[in-house]
Length: 265
Image (cartoon, rainbow, N blue to C red; front, side, top):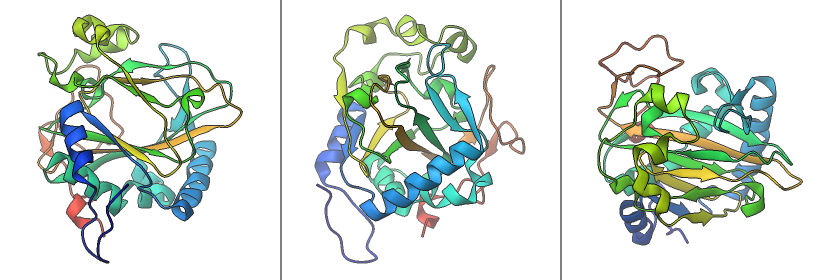
């Protein structure tokens, strides 16, 4: 359970979540988003995907997800969830370093869409130079195993170099690149994490993860907010795509579009 804190105090979680995040590369925080908020965000996320959705290519060449296609700042309705101070505060506590928002997207996997999300890690596809990047996977519905919950490779953030794979190669071989680049990961233990609506899993960008198909009768709906270090530099590599055309390579991320967690009030 999350710890209770005085009103207006910085939100924190129990030390066990911090230890799990740093030791295994991920952690599962139950009930971080209150039920009344979840219901509101669920409706907003579905509306956003329906009005501006695209197919996401994490199914190994097959369609497994639908997601919002524009940057989060073009969707005023979801900006509150991207900037959620409680989620951001926990991300900073887990990493122990000042962070800023990098991106945020809603994802839907529809009923009987049994295409799994392939094994991958996020750093290879992130056009940033930063000592830390972390994703918060916010469950907007209950996600048991049959609905396609996340599966993690614990300790995979401790793998030997290279720190990230070649982006062009990874995109050309999406179903195999991770275990080709780091073959020892294929034989490691795997942890399946079913979640309830309002739960949040946090994982480091170098942690291998995947998810199963949705074999249930209901949509699997989640929102992913990505955070990076306060001093992150935009540094795209060959094969990287990013929707912010105003950024220049070598540029520090501007506060107005990529707000610091300390400014989320």
